[in-house]
Amino acid sequence: MSSLHKSRIADFQDVLKEPTIALEKLRELSFSGIPCEGGLRCLCWKILLNYLPLERASWTSILAKQRELYSQFLREMIIQPGIAKANMGVSREDVTFEDHPLNPNPDSRWNTYFKDNEVLLQIDKDVRRLCPDISFFQRATEYPCLLILDPQNEFETLRKRVEQTTLKSQTVARNRSGVTNQEQNIKPQFFAFRWLTLLLSQEFLLPDVIRIWDSLFADDNRFDFLLLVCCAMLILIREQLLEGDFTVNMRLLQDYPITDVCQILQKAKELQDSK
Image 1: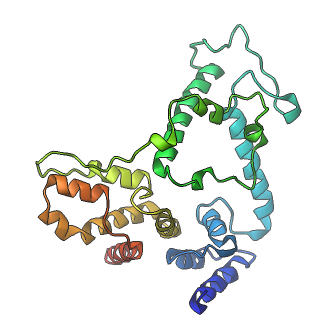
Image 2: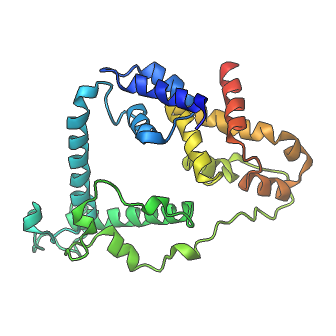
Image 3: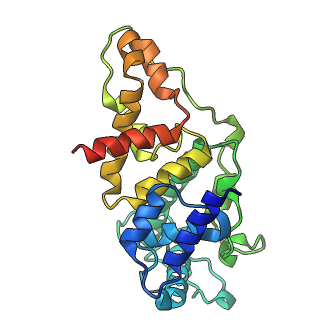
C-alpha cells in the first residue's frame, strides 16, 4: 500500500470519527474515490445516500430501526398472505371467504401480493442480467433475514418462486450485437436508456462501476453528474462516431471501448466546472 493511499485512508478516518460528520468534506474526499479498506466505502455510501445521519451518536439506533423496517417490508411484500409462523412474530392470516387468491378486488391483499410478485420477478431477472458471471449480488449479508434463509420455513418467498421459473442465470446472454440498420439515425434511447437506468453498471467492470458510483453519490446533484458522465463518454469517442456508420456506431455505444473510468470522470468534471 502506497503512502499516498495510506494518507487518503487517514483523511477519511479523520472525517468519520468526528461527532458530527462534515458532509462537504466527505463529499470532496469521496468524489475522488473511496478506499475499500476497513469498511470505509460502505460507511461513506450510507452517509452520502442519507441512510445514516451526520450525527454519529444516533447511528446505532438508526441502523436498528432501518433493519426492522427492512424486515417489515419483507413481511409485507415477500411473504405470501395467509402463511406465517407464529413463533417468528408474524400473525397468521388465513384465507377467508372475503379475501382469497382468486379475489379480483383491487384492495385484496392477495391481488397486491401477485402484483408485487411480478415486480420482484422482474427485479430478479434484471439482477441476473446485470452480471450473470459474478456472484457479488448473491453474497450473504451480515444481517440475514431468517424468514427468507430458513429452508424449512413455510413461506412462499421470492427465492422459491424464482426457482420455479425457467430463468437460469447461465442462459442469460448480453445482447451487444447492435442494430443492423444502415441509416445514421442514432437516438439516445438506443443506448442512453441503459446507461442511465442502470447507472452504467453494464458498461464497465464491477470495480470500475463502483469507482464511478463513488463520484455519483458524492455529488450533491448526483443524477445531473450522471448526465455529464454520459456526455463525457460520447465526447471521448466523438471521432470514432463521426467516422462510423449506424451499425458500427451502435456496436460502439453498446460495447463502450474506453476502460479508463478516471479519464471519463475527469472529462465529466471538466464539463461540470465549465457550466
